[in-house]
Image (cartoon, rainbow, N blue to C red):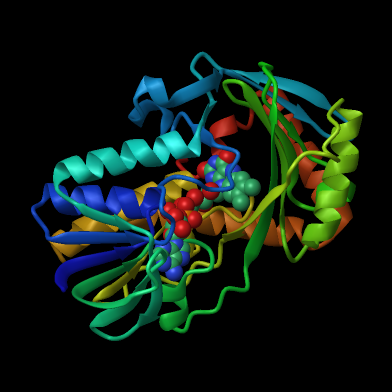
Length: 343
Ligand SMILES: Cc1cc2nc3c(=O)[nH]c(=O)nc-3n(C[C@H](O)[C@H](O)[C@H](O)COP(=O)(O)OP(=O)(O)OC[C@H]3O[C@@H](n4cnc5c(N)ncnc54)[C@H](O)[C@@H]3O)c2cc1C
C-alpha cells in the first residue's frame, strides 16, 4: 500500500492534521495502535483563548469564568467575563475530531501498531491478528505522543519530560482549583478540574524536579486534606514531552507531544497538538506556507521552558515566583491567559 501522507497517532494533533490534509484532497492515512480513538490520560482542560471558542458547545462538560488559585500564603479567585477554562472528555473530543477528519476524506485505521520506520515506508502490526504490513509514503507525520517512535527514528532525545498523574473520581462540583506548593508539587501544581459527573484530581511536575512516585504520594496526601480519599481510586499517569527540537525534517514532520511542543510549565498540550497538526498539514499542502503561526507557538513554548528552568533552580525561588504570579493575578497585573499556550 502507498499513501501520499501517513500520520502516526490519532490524538488531537494527528486528527487535526488529517482533517486539513483531507480538506485539500491529499491522500491521507492515519494509523492508531488502539482500537478506539480518544482514550488518553488527561485532565481535559481547554482554554478560551486556545480552543473553547473553536469546539462545538456540546463537547464542553463544564466551563469556568472563575479560577481558584491557592499557594502557601494566598488564596485568590480570578474572574473574567468569559470562561477562562472548560473541561472536555477526551474520548468525546477524539471521536468528534475523528468524525470530521473522516468526513473530510481521511482514511483512519485503528488497531495498527507502528513497529518500524524506514526512509520511505513503515512496518505496522495488526494488534488483533498479529499480521505485519508494509506501507510506503511520500510524507510521514509523527503525531505519536510523548514516547514517539517517529521521534526516535529521527534520533532526537526525550530528556525534558513532565509527569502528570490523574484520578478521575465520581462527583459533581463547580470550582476549578490550582494549588501551587513547592514542597508538594515542585515547580508544578495540583489541580481539581470538575467534569460533568466526575472530578479530575491530579498533579503535574517536571520529572527533573520531582520523581513520579513522590509526586503521587504527595498528591494523595494533599487530596485527603481537600476531602478526597484517593487511596482506593485507580491512578492514571502519563508523560508529557516538552523537549522541542524542531518540527520540519524534510519529508518527516513531528507534531504535538511527539515534537515536544507541550508546555513544560503547565503540561498544557491539547492546543499545541491541534495547532501544530494544522500547520504541518498546511506545510505539506504548500511548502511555501507561512510559518508565522508555528513560530508564535514555538516562541510561547520557549517562554514556558525558560520560566520552568528559572523556577526549577531552587525551591525557595520557585515558591517566591509562585507567590509573585499569584499576587499578579490577584491585582490584575497578570492575566490568567498569560499562562496559556495560546497567549
Ligand atoms: C495526567 C495528564 C493530564 C493532562 N491534562 C491536560 C489538560 O488538562 N489540558 C491539556 O491541554 N493537556 C493536558 N495534558 C497533555 C495532553 O494530554 C497532551 O499534550 C496531548 O494529548 C498531546 O496530543 P498529541 O496528539 O500530540 O498526542 P497524544 O494525545 O498522546 O496522541 C498520540 C497517539 O498516538 C498513538 N500512538 C503512540 N504510539 C503509537 C504507535 N507505535 N503506533 C500507532 N499509534 C501510536 C497513541 O495511542 C495516541 O492515540 C495532560 C497530560 C497528562 C499525562
